[in-house]
Length: 246
Picture (tube, rainbow, N blue to C red):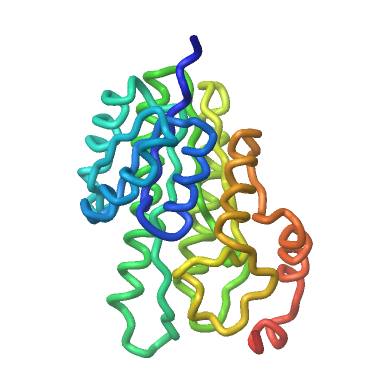
């Protein structure tokens, strides 16, 4: 009898993470759910208990960098290994330049870039010992260009994507798959305050596409691939005068 695959998700109690957990559970994966609040983890675990063959939960704040590797190790031990680690935890704040938002700037970098890289580093250490594994990083279409009022968010997503690209090169001979998914607008609390969300899709549809791509072990994809693959190329070439109006 084949043992069900296992996946660990950071930031699993809200937004994309919560909906990814539902998608993986519906496909029979064993789940390691991490997040900052125990009550939210317990709620989600109870919801998915009848769908997943095994669920473990661990509180984790990815800005507590020293706690990341021990949490991953405990989850791996409790599930008998981990096949996939989804580096999903993230924040998004409006941070216009020079307006006194340095605390939010630092928090964004701490979570989206440093915390994400620290999680991927711990994942690779585990996967090298196991001899296999898949690191999935959630970047963003926002990493394509710097946008008004969101410069630090764009920078962290671009930086994490470049890190994943380098990670893929370093692990290609270690049976470790590195997948970078860059969503466009997927309807979650993270982006509902944005007045204009072109090509927005539901969280259920967006995360279903994401899990399909993870299972295909792609290297990089925009989500959904259409129209964002085309939109990304257009954004790269638009002049600053046009981008400034967006």
